[in-house]
Length: 571
Ligand code: ADP
Ligand code: MG
Image 1 (cartoon, rainbow, N blue to C red):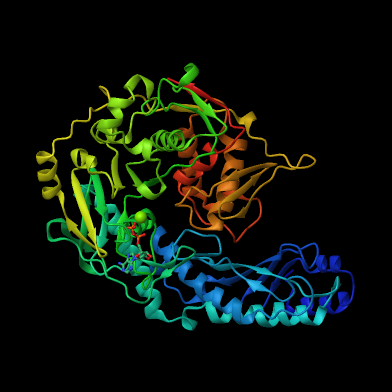
Image 2: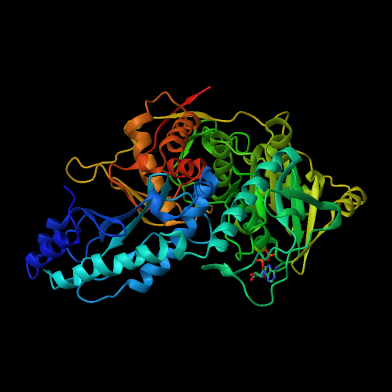
């Protein structure tokens, strides 16, 4: 039997002034005139994680035509739009009064990337939004009247102002969906066109600051492709767009300090995601499996074959099955690449600013002073072509200080006062005039990519008595059982909601799939399959609104940073 708003109001009246735990009595669902209110979980006290509440509007009443959510991309776009509107409504309807989180209404709020999320779900049966609600308290006592005003009044206002098509700007909804559809189409066409990245003319790449990802507003130089690299794409909604196509192969971005090299690379790192219009990067697209590679000294490495880059370590340490609790700059960068090749990528993105110099280059003079057999590192410059020619993995590398890279580049882009030019011919000409006498140290072939089977027993999810737990403390920290994972160097992880999902993906991998036989790559295939089929809800036993979908690349990077991980290498 369906309960109505009066039932909720009566219960709240009854428990008014009682201990906070009495709020448990309101759990359950209520039929309201405009929507169903489902109180899934009531927080234990006013300071705990807020209560989980869902609001559901039946399909027929929302006004959204099924064409607006018929494909996965459109669905993601529409849910993103609604989430953003709902987030603004929640902020308006939040009235802090009382202890702890009393009065707070919130929904997981997207940043500048448009991700598959669980905050809002839409289908033929209806539209559901998942909110967090801080049930009001004075001290630790129930404030029944305030709670009634909140759940029946202010939450309802959020519903009416964001979950019906009639309350939204319909043309803005359409534009948002069309823009995302275009971005997906653009990204999908890259490979067929022989490209790994595209930066549209007119794009605005710089951000306000390192900690503020909103677009820079003043003094922005908009992107303009060099003629020789310009290409056009026909998109389903926007029609023809033009911009710089970065061909597969080895691309070197050069230019003076402060001329916009890192900003361009960062935009390409995030080009694996879609962006809302106005962000400035709506027309930046990168192949979806692109991985940013950097040095990360101090990270742990477990059973990785880094021998393509590092061999003959002092004291005869093994680099075919290499483990360390404390990698150096160069070994960590080598491991990051070796792992990326294992979990799957077709494009590496590397910035000199976050690279180990001795990993990137060993010049002629150093080769003469320090003999090859005294230097464990084979520099990246001698491997980058093999990776492309043998493994089909392209690289875009920012390097302002080392012209030796001209010898291995297919394309050289020169950034000058934030504008790119095509310096490929000139770099070639310079390279032929100043013949480089350094010796290539890359050997005959790239070498072997690891295939590792993780041991499930090496990941311990227990925390306290028997309970298995993994959660995200912030964007860059996961607590898995009692083990902390530092993901601050996983730079394409953009939201704490993704980190939260990564934590539960690891838990699920450990519980469901890891058997000591399946390889990292096979495990990720299974997981992707499950998430494609069942969505992010497969990660939890309860409906949670705080997940955003991570790529397999980020899940793998988290797994690889487990200090306790043990693996078996398969040949
Ligand atoms: P580099 O890597 O070449 O040293 P950065 O990409 O770090 O240079 O950029 C240097 C500064 O210039 C940054 O503060 C950045 O925000 C700003 N910047 C980058 N691109 C642009 C642009 N297109 N227009 C205006 N400012 C920019
Ligand atoms: Mg830089």
